[in-house]
Amino acid sequence: MRSMSAKRRRELAQRKKVRAIVLERAGNRCEWAPLIPELACGWLPDRTVLEIDELRGGAYRCTEWLDPERCVATCPAHHDHKSAAKREMLARWSA
Image (cartoon, rainbow, N blue to C red):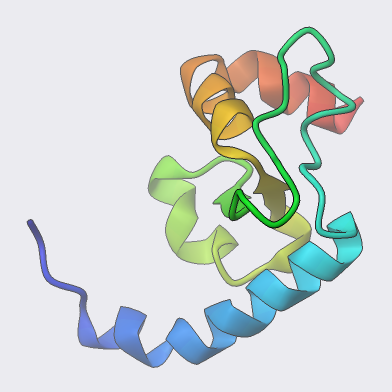
């Protein structure tokens, strides 16, 4: 397991703010659920912690993880689906 870089550690406070902004925008609900109705949402109020995911991730994660406009509140089920079918999910988000 890789350790966190000093730069990433310094950015954690800003990431926490991004997380709060994204969750407020989403109304503390999974933002992928309305876009992917064929997949049962795994979010349960008071039981499931929503994840904050970068739209593109990968090589872009280093720039997107601090941009609330490039992050999405998601339940674990939709996050897994997005990771498996990234191009399809990004096309739905853009539409």
